[in-house]
Length: 329
Image (cartoon, rainbow, N blue to C red; front, top):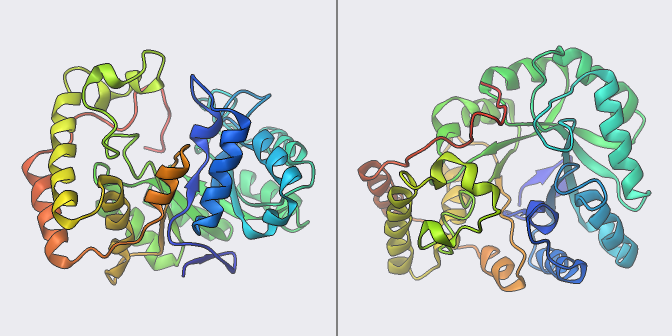
């Protein structure tokens, strides 16, 4: 079993974004059912965000209410929270004032019901040196016991190396899926392996493309932010949908679902000697989906090869993000 900060976690974690950050928020009761189901199925590494929803109902607000009702679950969960990017997630602020404001708000919203194990600035602030950001986090929050450790989110390999010289990095969060394999080629995974830093794979279902829920562009809700993403445009979506169908055919041949194949492909990457610990964090709101996502199935080398051949035959169309969303190069 993988571990972070010396705490054992399940091989598959749980992403909280969809519980509060969506055009049609689910009820709090349904969110509680989802959180309970995740924990019951061994998905005890939870990843949320200060900006996952409006200030009055984001991940922290939901978690405070959940742990108020189920205080016995607090110690079972390893909690990672992203912040310091504003409420719209587009204004990275790693300044001392910005980091303090974000983290103090996150801690206050939890009302002491759960300690934040990992805090990540969701994007690197190009205007603030990392040593300035980390000095505040390390001295004022880690050393005082307010948080467990410091993580990185959406950074390139050189940033990971730079950060590791300045502070202890306990996790690196990066987009990784069958449709976003960049970390395997751009040095991110290799750097994490070398430095023995766990890699948290977000969007392992490629924002729903690998769930089977989309059959055409019209299946994307009009108000969904996905309509602004390059891979969901009328000219790119049909190609990506066709690729998803081909991967789904491989899953059917294996006797598992498309999401199960997508998640277990990520887990199976760790069999390779040059890979770090990798923990995918799928998000789901239905208990049935959470139970489906939690299942472990073995991916053989022959199946790896077949998947690679499919991905080489039909390439993913479109960038991961629209240009309005900042990334670290």
